[in-house]
Every structure is written in C-alpha cells, then in structure tokens.
Length: 206
Image (cartoon, rainbow, N blue to C red; front, top):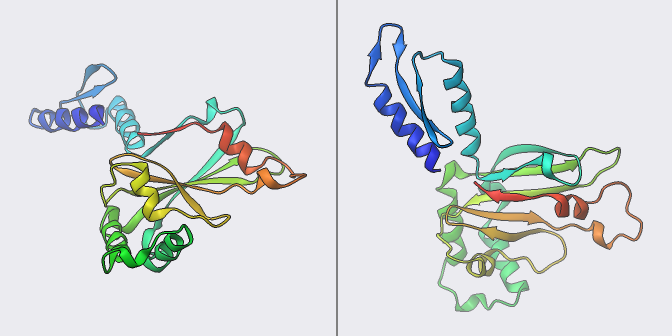
C-alpha cells in the first residue's frame, strides 16, 4: 500500500511537468523512484499493471505451493450470497441468544457491507492441476463493520453446521472466509482433495 500511495503521489506531481512529446512522470517501485518521459512508456505500463495487481486484497504465490495449482478469480454480489436471516440462524445454531441483540442487528451488518466496494466481494477458487481435483475457495469481504478481532468477526459470521463458509482471518480492511473441506473425512478420496489444496496454499493479505 505504501508503494501504491507513493506511485499515485508521484504520478500527480509528474503530470504537472508537461513536455512536447508527453508527460514526465515519476513513480516509486521497490525502493527507488523512476522517471517516465512519455505516456506510452513501456516501463510505465508495467508498473501500472504491477500496482493494479497489488491492489487486490489477497496475495498468493502458486509457484511456491507444494501442489501445482490454478486459480479462478471473480467478483460476486454480496447481497446475493449473504442475508440477515441466514446470519441470525447460523448464530443461533452456534448457541448465540439472538434475543439479547439489538433490533435489526444482523440487518445493520448486511447493510454496512452492501454499501462498501459496490456490494461486491472477491472470490478465489483454487484447483490442483491434476486429472481429478476438488476445489478450495476463499472469499474476501470488505470489513465495513470495522471488526477489531477474529473473535468479533466469528461472533457474527460463524457457522457451526457441517459444511458452509467459515470466517478464518481478517485485518482492518478485509474479512476472509474459507469453504469447509469434506475430503479429510472421505475414506478413499479420488484425486487431489480440498484439504490437500488448502494445506499447500500460502496466502496473505496485500
């Protein structure tokens, strides 16, 4: 995020310096400033592409995983896949006395997240490059309710039934969910299981 902020700042000041063949822009990459003389500078195009990739909330390196993996990335509509009634039922199944909560408690959570990131969230589906493979899915939702701890996050989004989507990690900006893996409970799994993909995958927040 520091590099991106410096990139934007440098580009802003760089656009103030106009030349006959285009702008002179300065951008920050790694630990140094670089100068781009023209709007179609290949170096500038590469750095813009790099910074756009860094803006995604999830960092992963498939080359470093123990299994050869591929990933399908999409943005989905939050309000289609989450609703207040489901959150309330999940909380009750986890032993929460929802009668003690304020009226409209779960509706307020849904409304806050719907209003962030254009009601969208990131979805990453990881698959092993094998003849037969299950999938492992991660979903990143904006932390629009400003949860400060994983315990707070789980209190509102936890799932205590088998299967489903579980809160697994968070930071100030994003909430991370992961799908449950049934492969660990199958006596004779066929191909690469969800659990094997999950265990080989190393992800971090950007």
